[in-house]
Image (cartoon, rainbow, N blue to C red; front, side):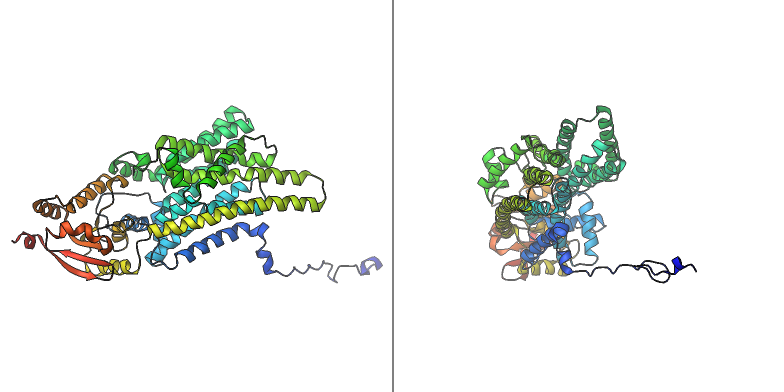
Length: 535
C-alpha cells in the first residue's frame, strides 16, 4: 500500500465510503408550517368546524340528503321512490361507498362535509399559480366560508358542491392545456368535464359559458397561434365527449322523465337585482355587493406581472361565465361560482404585490412591513366573510333542519313496522321542508310529497304532489278522496303534529288508526278500502 493510500482522509471511514449524514430530527412544528401545509390546515379546520356544528343534530339539514339516500337505493337495485325519477350516478356511488362502513345518517353527514371542503383543493391550485401558499390558503378559506356555499350545504345540495370541484379542476387544467397543448392537462380537463356531467346537470349547463369565457380570456391575454389553440380546444372537447358517453343513459332517462326547462327544472328564479342580491348575499348584502363591484373591476386594471396573468383568466371566467349563465337560465345557483370568482379576483392585487416584492431590492424590514400590511388586508376580508358566513350557516341550518330525535323515532318505526311496499303520504315541516324524501331514503318507503309541484323536476313527481295536495283540500268531495286513495295505494300518513292541521280535511273524510305517536310526530294507518266503503 502506498503512503498516499494509507493516509487518513477527513470525512472518510476505513472502507473508503463517506459516512451518511445524520437526518435532522423531525419536529411536529414542521407539519404545522402554514407556508407548506396551509391547505391541509384549512380543509381539516373547515371540516372540523362543520362537523361540530352538525354534531348535535340527528341528521344533516335539508330534505335533499334523504333524496340522495333514495337515489342510492334505486341505483343499486332497491326500489323506494313512488315516482319515476333518475339522478346522475357519481354522488350515489360515493354515498354507497360510505354506507359500506358508516350508518346512513353519518354517511350523509360525511358526504356533505366532504364535498363542501373538496372545492377548496382546485381553488387553492388555481391561486397557487400566482400567490404564495399562505395567501392562497387564506383566500381558499374565504371561499369555503362564503355564504352561498353554506346555504348549499344546509339544504343538501351535495351534487352541486361536488360538481363545482370538478368544474374548478377543469378550469385549472385547461389554463395549461389550451396554451401548451400538453396531452396530460387536456385529458385531465376532459376527465373533470365528464365528472361534472355525471354529477350535476345544472353545473354542466353553467360550465359551457364559463369555459367559453375562459378560452376567450386566455386567447386575448396570451395571444397564441390560432390553429394550435383551436386544435388543443378540439382535443379537449373530443376527449370530454368520449369520457362523458358512459353517463349518456342517465341523461336520456332524465330528460324523458322531467317536465319543464332542463336548465331550470324547479322553476326557481329571481328576475330583479333586489331579489337576487337579497338571497345570494343574504348574510351581508352591502359588503358582498361592494366586493362584487370591486372584484369585477380588478381584472380590468393594468396589473402587470406574470403572477397576475396566471390567475386573471380564471377569475374572469368564474364571474362572467356564470353571470351569463344566470342571464340565460334565471337560476340563482349560478352565483355559487360567482362568489368563487369574487374571492379569486381578490388574489390579483395579492399576486401583483408579491411579484413586486420578489423583484425589489429593499431591506428585509420593509418587505416584512409590506407583507404584514397585505396580510392584514386579507385577514380583514377573511374575518368579515367568515363571521357572516357562519351566521348564514347557523340560520340556514335552523331553517332546513327537519330530522330531529322525534322525527328519527318515527322514521325508524315506519321502517321496522310497515311492509316494504307500503305507500306513505308525508307532510312538510314548519319551515315548509318536506319529510317525503327522508321517508323514501331512510325509511325506504315510497312516498307522496306535499312539496309545491313547481319545486319538483319530474312529471310523475309533480302529478303525485298535485294528488296529495288534492287529498288535503277542504273542497275535495269524500268520493274523490276515496278514489285518489284507491288509485295511489296510500296506506300511511307520516304526520308532523306541529303542522298536522293541514290533514284535518282528509281525516274527516276517511277512517284511520293511530299506529305510532310521540311528542311531535304521529303515524296514521288508513283503513283498507273495503272498510272505508262501509257506512
